[in-house]
Length: 248
Image 1 (cartoon, rainbow, N blue to C red):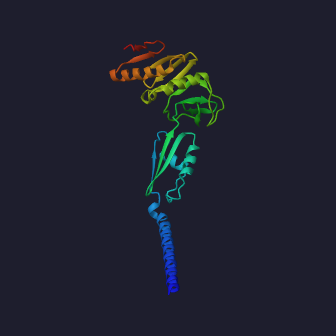
Image 2: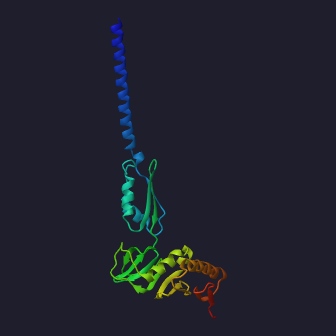
Image 3: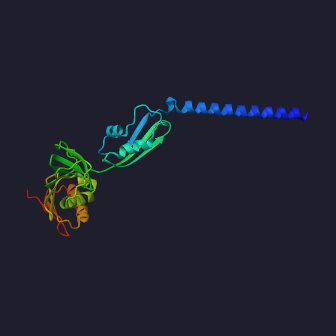
């Protein structure tokens, strides 16, 4: 009698274990079908932080296809592809369930154009060449004149004392002031002159106090705009800047 009961108990345990295994297998199959369903196809790709790089360029470099399962998408691969673009400084890629990929990028900021052997190059604040152009069709940042670079390529680091001083000055400007400059001329290492889009020239002078001069530039340009002043030049060579009003 006891033997029969033990056999029944063992049979019940086997049946219970088999049922549990079947349930686990069914759950795995259901989960596999669920995660591979169209519900997890990327429906939206959000690109944030870009200003100079177009969304189309970001998606092309990232290699995000129009239809891909969100679980199969390797965010690390997207990040690696974007980080290989010299225009990109930092990248963060996130999944937002059920069907969105968010790409947050921090760009290398183009700071100026400089003439080179074969045209012009676009450089950032560290002097890295971000792009090479034969002609300047659209100028979004100031052009640095008075210096011509040699045969430089995208990815090269430019080292030039006069150029470094200009980049230090430009990098310290706020965005509003930077957008008002059209050119910075290196007359000599001790004589930098900037020109605004309204033909006001700014005597920056030598490489001393460049962050301070940049701050003064922004403040004076704002004052000129607010007060509708007609200015011929601004001289930053002195502790107290000189603002010369244009003769009418």
